Length: 175
Image (cartoon, rainbow, N blue to C red):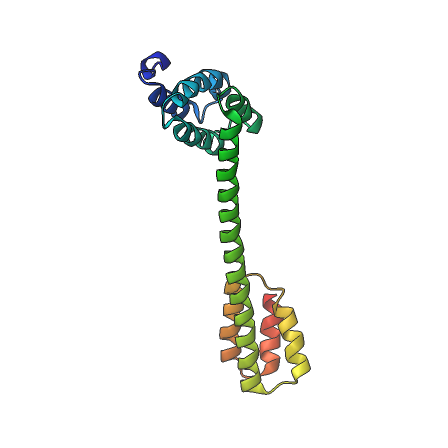
């Protein structure tokens, strides 16, 4: 669709043009025109919220534009500083949320790994009554294993072997 046909309403036009060019290299060339449409949108009562939504979309999905391009568009808007602060706050909140989720996931993985190691050590202790120093060294060695499936396989091996030596051979073959 030609750009002129999209420019019926400023908000609609800014949104449609942004969606049309968001994954295309021509986006950088169209930013000033989209910014002018955003200025028109801002003159409406709920315009600031609409522009913030457009800017967030631009920053998150636009691979052909950088922060400096977004800042240039925002600076050309009335109340640009206020909008940039709002957009920056939204980006920080999203970054914090993503960081928390990533940290939680890593913590869960680490806890699961440690639990599997403790269970494996307890199984070997119960089955073969090895020296505690040997078990501590084994636990330290198992902490280097990142792959949970590998730890799971070692747990199964520990349940099936007939001796500590047999487990040790299987361990050396898998790490």
